[in-house]
Image (cartoon, rainbow, N blue to C red; front, top):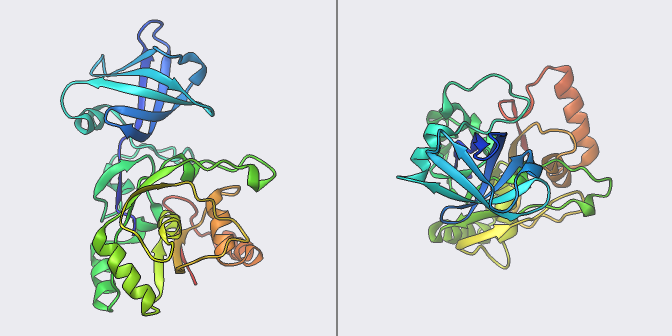
Length: 282
């Protein structure tokens, strides 16, 4: 399971010179107080531009420009950054969720531990503490990895040739004990069940003649034709069309069968996307 925790990464502020409204979605902390962020409207943000949030409680100075509306910002504030963010930011809900989320915990898994994601690993939202206890009681070993969800996970595919789609890097961590147990279970021929596509991408990225503990980053893009190395089953949601996520499950199972399942789900009014229903694929 991916134990990442979503931060209230969506900020609405204004340029300090023109007072133009700017939206910033924090994607990844590159180093302390330096963030990669999706910015709207990005064309208004040049090197040296300062955006103010909460009457100056937080300021973001642009120190780098990247493609696709991404800017690099230096954060200027007093106190503890996550506390400042908690006061000023909102949860970065997908655009198809239009209601305000009154309870922020609804967009966190019950096992979320390490803050850093711009989106929830939503397959994990189906698990309650009680359900996890029942699963463990059946003899299932529950292990955790951490991948901070960024643009690589939720940016849609906008090219006709999938090979031209550029995945963005996301950082992940596997601790020593998890790596040791995964290697042991792999050796014993146990089935590894990944909760969510972020867990799939982490494990498939990391496995190379065994699992390796440490901090890494991945931009792995899994689409039909990919040969899975260690995943035996996937628990996942129903995904958006033209997403890398539906390509991943089509690679694991079978594109035609996946489309059949989706067609059946539409007929039976299953709920799709982040707060939707779940499926188990083996």
